[in-house]
Length: 186
Image 1 (cartoon, one colour):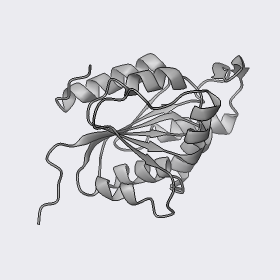
Image 2 (tube, rainbow, N blue to C red; image 1 turned 30 degrees about the vertical axis):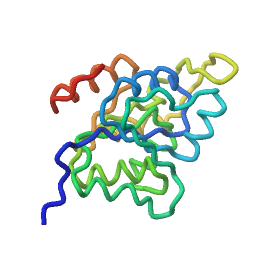
Image 3 (cartoon, rainbow, N blue to C red; image 1 turned 45 degrees about the horizontal axis):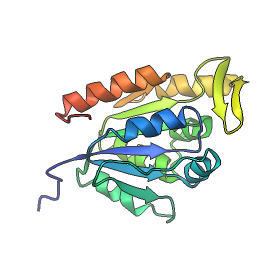
């Protein structure tokens, strides 16, 4: 019995990062056939930043992190996804992905995407020794720890995984992937 999806979708996992969260949401609003995987921390950050997921294209589905077994991940085995975007990805999420820990909805979908050879693009937050990032009260300098930078580098070695470090890199990788699968972006 063939259970593969005839029209695969784009999966996008949001973690608890506020790093370019507004720009990320704006980019998500342009994506057709989108499923959003929202961690509990991601849901909290959206509220803290006064953001929401309204204005997505028709048919967008949102899966929230609420069940221990993360039932939506089974759709990766049925061919429902042509690609996964993970990001903005916190250093915690990147570390878990590197260690093979899948205890949140975003880390679980990343693991399942890898097991199914679904290409993933990870927009890592902690990529440089000194960075500017936005918090609800404004912009700040952050100083990622050496372990954070090492984990980002390790993730770059994963099969079927592209790690991007900037918003323009995310856009370029995403648009290239969407063109590769024949999806028009609005």
